[in-house]
Length: 213
Image (cartoon, rainbow, N blue to C red; front, side):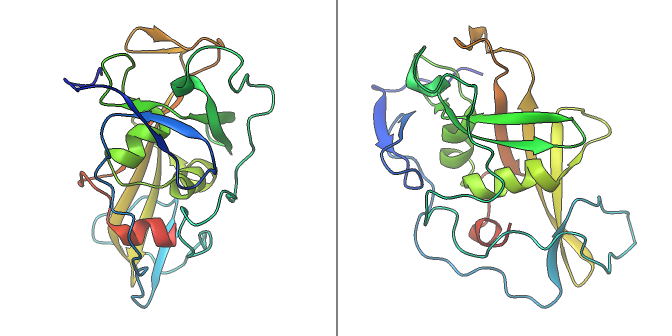
């Protein structure tokens, strides 16, 4: 989906990647302040989908460090961008940002820098899920790596959060296996990769999601 009207594209430094530049419009609305992670007893993430009326009592997934994903350019489960032209072709939105492997898709899924709210480029990638949905890169890499493929949508990968065995949050990553989005073809000929990611039922992911997944 192409972004709406915007004055002019502006480049903003990705706080988690040193000098990497991401194409965005405006300053974005994501809250970057210090927040505390969920400290509720029995709180954990799992690739197991909730069953109505049934509590989950075991945690097959412990999650990554509770340290904010924006605090360091180093990420868990990041396979990098080997074999992908990182800036030799095209414009910055198409550059590879990171990648992770999902066993259900049997594929390495790329996260491109992407864009959000631009006249020139479609909305997709890191810039979209960060600035539109307040979701950091680390939760997305973890969801790709440990999440389960939605049985009703083969290009949706999900992670579920439980408190005391009861489901209370879902993070979803939408993967686009084609080499184009909104009629824009990726100049390197590789799949789009992560088109978007979000907390189901929320426009902005609660900050504790970024601290615990």
